[in-house]
Image (cartoon, rainbow, N blue to C red):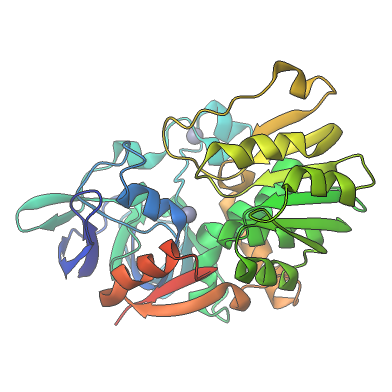
Length: 360
Ligand SMILES: [Zn+2]
Ligand SMILES: [Zn+2]
């Protein structure tokens, strides 16, 4: 199989041939058809998250076709189309039993054997997936079957960005009809916070970004107002646009620097709910005034859009088929796996909502 491997942080990925083991007990081998390029992969390349061991095949937003299954697999068979979930929940821990598999105490990747080898070295799979490879062997709980009439390139985006953003609005925040929302950052995840809020019935949706091309996209995805934070103070403008009260909900969907995390608290009204969706680099301190939360405001982190992948992936695709969820419009560019480093350069320049890698 062919895959894009990160050997050292801040270096190009190396596209090379690897050996892949057969699927073991309860495992599924997937032939990858498409993989989204997510900002989380970029964090790993830049060395901002040290908990992912290298070398590793990057990629955690993939869709493909089941090639083979190991003994004991009951949920899929060869030929099924699947979206991969990057949180392979155990099903047994307190969080799983409470219906919160997105914050499973013991995700299966942490106990898994190495399945990939290259030039005699063990190669890891990012988040237990490694979707920048032409094949991947994953636990069956990570392979979520979907209808075969959904194009796999757009389906792949449901594996991370769409679920993370739409889920943050609908599941984590529980956005109510007729409310106001502010979204900081209009990349792949922020655009999905916007369309998730619109789906939930929010009527004022304020998009905040520093790039006008991203704000144009935000309006296509349902934003009713736009604020370019390089030209005006987003907090003051959001308060003004919400009749002096502030937004009911705010989402931080950037995950780079402290300021928007703080602004996403300051721009909400009394009892406002702030959801931190962006995954920041390690050691990103956010300093708030202890009184900032006094008016019964709350701040919640959102992990994988509080999703239950086996339930939420198919539902999101039903919304897509009904014309209520935009997926095609998210795919700004398509690259071959060999050009993966060009895809990251486009991401770093802020040119794309999402790039998708395709496999030969
Ligand atoms: Zn991601
Ligand atoms: Zn669990």
